[in-house]
Image (tube, rainbow, N blue to C red; front, side):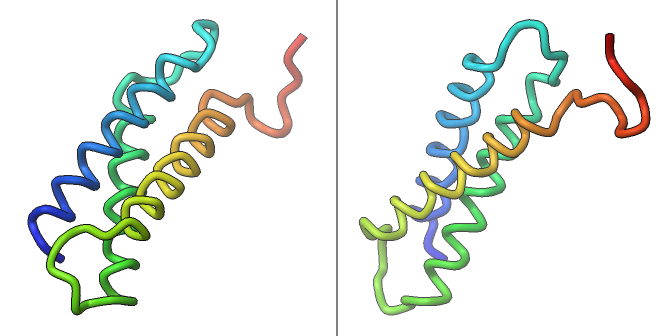
Length: 93
């Protein structure tokens, strides 16, 4: 993994995480850092997977950036859906 790929992953993860946090409803009590951390972690994971598949490139590729965006979107979406849910046995009225 090159430094450029890692920097790109962190920046894309931050941007998507902040956008996801801004889109969450105000009524949900999700910590500010959670969607951002999920976006960064998912984008870095995408970089690792892309680098394992294609190691001969020196910088970020279009496929790698697309994977970073898709993984970050998926990570932030999972956090938005699952965070601040009541436990399964408890009913909310």
